[in-house]
Length: 76
Image (cartoon, rainbow, N blue to C red):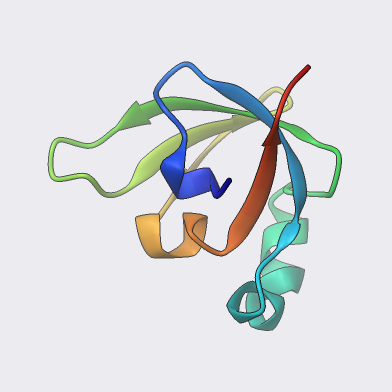
């Protein structure tokens, strides 16, 4: 599943990055989107972009197109 496909309130773990996401990997890693990190989708703007994501104890805003480059897996 992709980060952009999550529902509000859903928690997942970062699994990795898509092929397109590898070009931005350093930026995502600097925001705390490390493989294994827990992410929760907190809010989606009325127009559908940006998304507010909680990574650890930090809230970040990310464009839907960028969220589509981040692979996540449902938290078990």
